[in-house]
Amino acid sequence: MIWTTEQRYRRIEDARPDEVTQLKEKVKACKWRQTFHIQPETGLLNDPNGFSYYNGEYHLFYQWFPLGPVHGLKYWYHTKSKDLVHWENVGVGIEPSSYFDSHGAYSGSAIEHEGKLYLLYTGNTRDENWLRHPYQCLAIMNEQNEIQKLEHPVIASIPNGYTDHYRDPKVWKEGSLFYAVIGAQRESKDGCAVLYRSSDLLNWQFQGELSTNLKDFGYMWECPDYFELDEQGVLLFCPQGIMPKEDNFHNIYQSGYILGNKLDVNNLSMPHGSFHELDKGFDFYAPQTIQAPDGRRILVGWMGLPDIEYPTDNSGWAHCLTLPRELSIRNGKLIQQPVKELESLRGEQQNVEDLLNHDKKVYDAFSGTAFEMICHFENYDAEEFGIEFRAGEIEKTIIKYDAAERKVVLDRTLSGESVAEDYGTVRKGYLKAQKIKFHMYVDTSSVEIFVNDGEEVFTSRIFPNSDSQDIRFFSNGKTRFNATKWDYQ
Ligand code: FRU
Image (cartoon, rainbow, N blue to C red):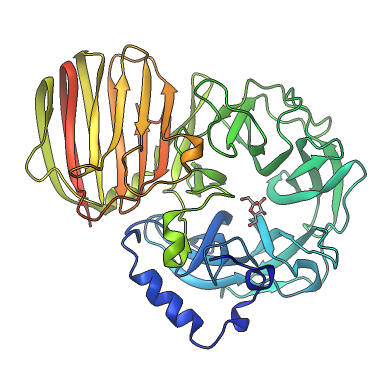
């Protein structure tokens, strides 16, 4: 189906009678609905927004176009949770309803202030010539989860030197001052991040551009996020327009980080190392982090990418969010681990321990469509070993270690219905290790694999048939392994 601009920019109230009911039925019938991931009831989900802990609960909003699987008029949809695992749908958080967000309540972030939750977001507007005019807007949520928008934007203009690609404020507090980074494009058509400062979240002063050593690094940086961890500064952002290089940057757009000294908010410098992708999988973008009440830095991403069609489109919905991950720094690298709260999803447990010797083996009860599994491979004397899962007669998704090349490889060539094949069907990440641990969360249409306690993560959607449920362990030499699997409960 081709979506016209009019169809994309419709509000929920503009839907034809029965349209939403029919859409809900279509979505319900989809065989790729997830079981333990945040997904939209209908339509399209993209970036996580306003991730916060407020009034005793986690709040997580997301970009949402309700009426179909396309990037149309965006709302903020509100979900909340007490444990980061079980999420309750609250309903629409921010509607695009005013002059300053007429074409979408775009991405943004949240911070608690004077007992209320302040939501800073980009109001997307288009004029009669379809030219973009972004405003940075504010909405305030009270303890009853009622959200009120301010009538006027808090940042109403774009400073000289930048284009109308100016969006996605991420706010934090340092001492008594608030700061926000915003993703921007210079007039010279390259991407960067800019910094603002405020003492009350209402009046913001432009501080300038964050100075990095990344020159000509894409034409736009979306969704920046700055935080400090272990006395170091971390800037996450999503550069668009980076060319593939060896095993890196093969997705349509990238999502990664630079790590270095803490940002000096006065001279805007942050000496840093090179840019690393956060995730080596096929579907990961626009992550956002928060600091949990116990001090952990937790990240949630969008398990999808802009400008790519997905097989669920035909069923009236698209995308989900990733599981929450705890961040840490190990040897100058950002490490991601599933949050410990996810253990509460563990149901029935199976164990196996065996020696693989030039073979591929299956075990009773090692099968399924939604499960968690931890697998250790040790003492390997093989060039290649790994796991096939969501496997059937023809279909299979493969995670393996190529010991000869020292690379972890995720292969979705035969995963089921194809996605974005123009961008390749195999992803690789270099990892030198004597032992390999795959910690995987498989849901109906996705997989997140944490390799060696978060050294690398591979996050991907997969679209297999419902009856492709086998799990097979293989090695082309001698390899000892043990695996524990928990059904999802
Ligand atoms: C990233 C993004 C943001 C924008 C939002 C719109 O995926 O393009 O830059 O605010 O999505 O939905």
